[in-house]
Image (cartoon, rainbow, N blue to C red; front, side):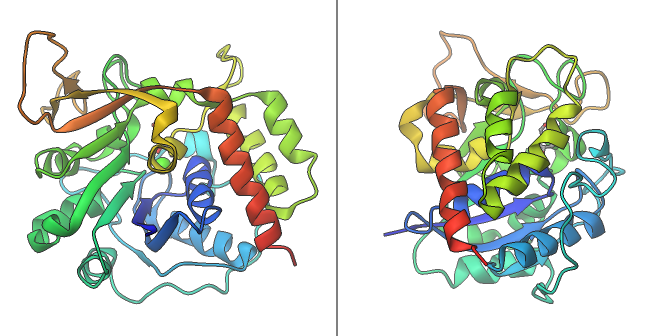
Length: 315
Ligand code: BDR
Ligand code: CA
């Protein structure tokens, strides 16, 4: 039986790669919906990006847009990395794909409750929509198998020394998710930096004929330009990890840990504080923290998905 997933995202370059990995494996994933949330850019822009992507692909899933700002804070954008549109680097057509008219939170509730079997949520942006869903419609909790997030880090952040962007933007929403009792799989910065892509691999995508591989190459060229000069040997495709783990868990290493979210204003706001004390034994630690991945295998599986889509979306 295929795995039912719902992706909540703020596209965003790596968000798009994560969606494509799921769509490019239709025998494995049943994508029951995609929802958008403000983060990398405004809600309006990231939603437009999803509609443009689907129009370009000529394929789609049910989709809806959600929260325009975090639950209790002002929005901070990730536009330095993702550009003015939130998805700079490729000329997308004007969108013809239309969203469901319902708000993402109601949309998610309906899709989850009506799904035949359990659903795995894959949030790869700030956790606002998911926090609101769990607080508004707690009846969904027993139908959710796991929440595979991109967010957090156990050693060092990217927004501040301690906090990663997705968690930092809406720590209150993250708090609700990590306290929900639903198993969380956390693709934090440790694993996302282990699964990076090189300049050579991006160039190889640009050189392909397939319309999806080529688009990904150009998008990634823009995306990694922000990190150029930092001296990385490869560039993190953060959000892809949250989907990849569901598809190929055997290529990852992880530790099951108790993780708490720091919602206190101050220097450690947004920290995913993992209890790393070896002698602490939790009966049910709330989080599977992914730590490392076989980078070459990771890229191979991702590129295979792009190639599948080159065929599926040929026009
Ligand atoms: C996260 O922030 C965003 O810029 C990316 O899309 C990813 O979800 C990485 O910190
Ligand atoms: Ca994202």
